[in-house]
Image (cartoon, rainbow, N blue to C red; front, top):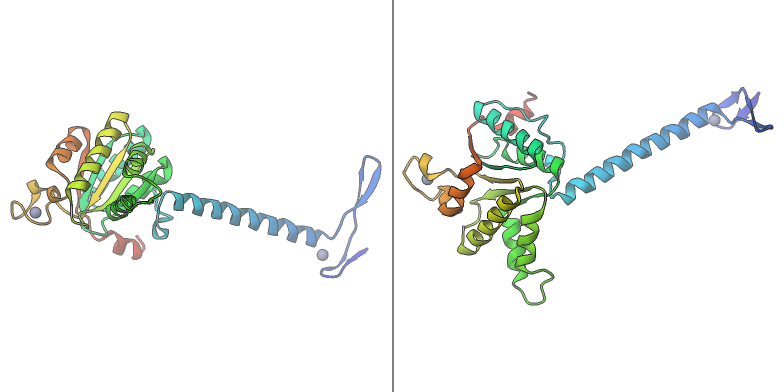
Length: 242
Ligand SMILES: [Zn+2]
Ligand SMILES: [Zn+2]
C-alpha cells in the first residue's frame, strides 16, 4: 500500500516500460489532474470562441444566437429564416429585414455572420468610423473603410434609419452595395422602418427611402429579398422559454 497525503491509502501499481519498473501514483490525484486539464481545455476553447465572436463585432447578448435556435413564430419570420439559411449555403444573396424591434432581425444576421465570417455593424458604428477618418492624422481613410466593408465575406448593417440619412451615407452605402453585388458577396440590411409602398400614410419620416436612396432600393430588389418581420415580440417570447 502507498499513501497519498490528500487521499490516503491506495494500491500502487507497477508498469514495466522498456524494462524499467515505474510505480503509478495516486489514482485519485491523477483523476483530479485530468479533470483540471479537461476544464482548462473547455475554458480555452470558450475564450477563443468569445474572441472570434468579438472580432465579428457580435455583441455579448447575441453570443449564443444561431440560425438553429431561431424561433420563427410567424410566416414572415419563417421566410426570413429560409433566406438566411440560403445565404449561408450559397455564401451569397441580399436580404433586407424590416420590422419593429424584437422580431429577431439581429439574431438572424448574427446567425449568418458567425458562420460566414465578416461582421455586423450598426449604421452608426460605420458612420462614426468614417467620420473619424476625416480628421487629419486619422489612421485609416474613408476608402479603406468602405473597401474593407465591400470585401469581407459577409456584411450585415443594423439599425438603418436610427441616424439621419445623409448624402454621404447614401454614397458609401451605394458603393458597398454595388461592389458586393459585383463580387457576389452576401449583404444584409436591417431597419425598423418600412418601405414607402407599405407606408400607412403614403410617405412619412419612417419610410426607409429617407435613409436608403431609391436607387439602392431598386438595385437591392433586383435579386434580393425583402421581409417585413411582423412577428410577436421575439425577445419576450424567448424569455418566456419557448
Ligand atoms: Zn491523491
Ligand atoms: Zn412611412
